[in-house]
Image 1 (tube, rainbow, N blue to C red):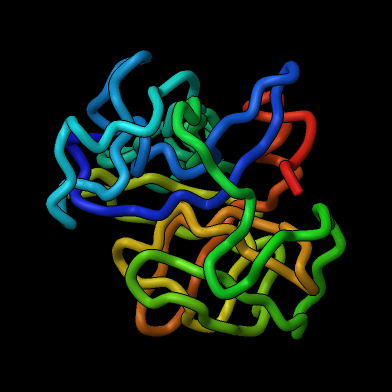
Image 2 (image 1 turned 180 degrees about the vertical axis):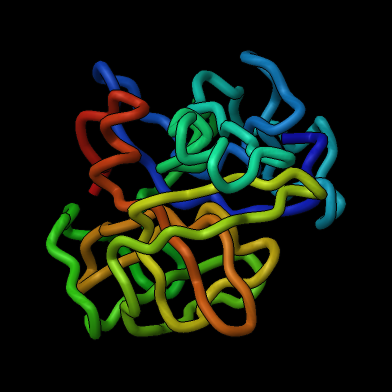
Length: 205
């Protein structure tokens, strides 16, 4: 959205028969409201309102836990997050292909430690990695606000700033939504949970 510097359009999904963009909350929705424009390219890449490709339609809010510690956090599980995800309309011609990957063949929920995965993002392009965990609990910093995520996919490093929103793939199938990373690990929401939270029915292949 116009308030965000850069991010990645992961791909296209269907909800109630409508084709929508699926990316992260902090790429499409942070600081925005329903109906706000979605730009391609983004502001960091000199995008302007003339580069509108769609509009924000839905998101799953992130609950921030800064200042909530230890014993208190354990009593209020509502501070836990499972997805960083949002949807936008697509109002320009498109082809449902991922750069350097092509069309995906579907989705998969079967992910094991050691599995080979990949993503294609705005900053680092196509990268590959290995799954380190399928139920990681991590704290993620959002410009000084802390959010606790549970049951996440953790990989070897494959995402850098601007790659957020990339789709995590296993054998050409969508398995996760990349949302954070560091020089040591990459993080993705399990795709089943993303689909549940945003009531998505299918992926556009």
